[in-house]
Amino acid sequence: MDILSLPYDALCRKFAALHGKLGKGVFHADAVFQKLYRDGVFDPESLPEFVANLPLARSAKQHFSFALPPLAGKQGDGDTFKFLLRLHDGLESETVVIPMRKYKTLCVSSQVGCKMGCRFCETARMGFVRHLTAGEIVAQVMVARHVLREPVENIVFMGMGEPMDNFDAVADAIRILTDQRGLAIAAKNIAVSTVGHVTGIERLAKLVGADKSSGRLQRLHLAVSLNAPNDEIRAAIMPVNGLWSMSELKDALLRWPLNHPDDFILAEYVLLEGVNDAPEHALMLAEYLRGLNACVNLIPYNPGLDGTYVRPSPERVTEFFKTLSDAGQYCRIRGTKGDNAMAACGQLGNRALSRSLRQAQGPVLEVT
Image (tube, rainbow, N blue to C red; front, side):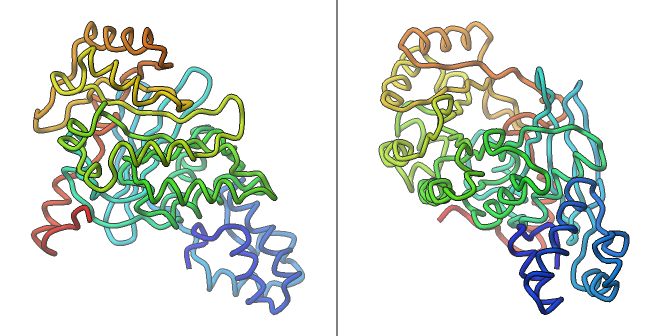
């Protein structure tokens, strides 16, 4: 059993089953949890809490596995770099370390590939391969902190995959990441990005709303990959719009719990030349977002491998930004980082791996 997939309460129950007594289960599980996540070490026999019960320590080592996936590659572009982890089945996850002004952000993946089919995204062209487990998601953070020694403080679920399509594993990973007894990453420093998976947004909103006792998840951030000002353009570049219209998406966003005056929904908008980057598009976008406490994150398109779309000129980006701002919509332009290493927004994905899997296993899953 992968110990990295178990939130604190689940780990306590497992230790209780090994020990036969709940109280002792909590005592020993707590020691393992803290040592594991704070120091990156799992060896119960070395912990003072197990000195009087070495058989339990040996039993735990037989029942749980703790082996971080090995590094399979690392590609850099300045201070931004992408690292690949080799998973147990030979597949690879992709994670990006992004230096900010005062901290480092880790962009984690929730799937290998993606089934959402966004036309401008390299991961979508790879197709869907499989979900990552909660442990494989958490392992990306553990490798960044304890192997690469990167002091990451900010986590964004913006790597490969649609987090809401792998909801249970992502929710468990967030519980582990935010636990004060371990990695202790504040929920306000975690953002979950979705293409507009309305059912997933509603489930995540319930999870945040239900977390009143600990308050750990109350300020979890939601980011929505909007990328269009109307249904016509969005449907042409994002198949998910056929499942949930922009009107249905906005209804879900209006119900998202914003539990602090400083919190807002992040509306991500990839600017594609000649597709969604005209001043009239900016005005329509401002009108669509009216009534939402949102910040638009403008992302000049990061080119993929096939050259289908083009990044707008800096002047065009500035014009869009100014039109949107003048219309009263809070927005900012995201600086491009990592595009030369295929580590920027929309560039993650191993097409060669996807082709080999298709040949061996047949077609991958499509959007349903």
